[in-house]
Amino acid sequence: MSARQPLPNWVTIVLMPVLNVLLAFVIGGLAVAIIGENPLDAMWALFYGAFGTGMGWGFTLHYATNFIFTGLAVAIAFKAGMFNIGGE
Image (cartoon, rainbow, N blue to C red; front, side):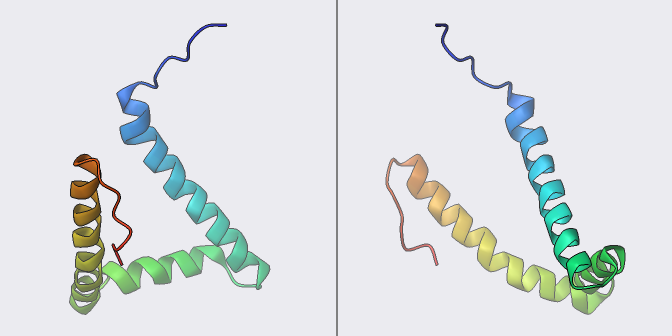
């Protein structure tokens, strides 16, 4: 039995995040279609609400800032070899 080879960097840095986002859109589109609405209209409303106006950009940045700083705090602890359970 041969040892597993690690994945190339482009797979973990580019391909996996893109596939995850596409899968999330497909699952979300299926959920919207199940309730009887048009998934493309729902995605357009999602993007327009987040980026279509100056107020949308402001709210997007306002709420994303909390997630960004929480991710940075957890990443610092993880790099130090610690486990941070209080990232909320």
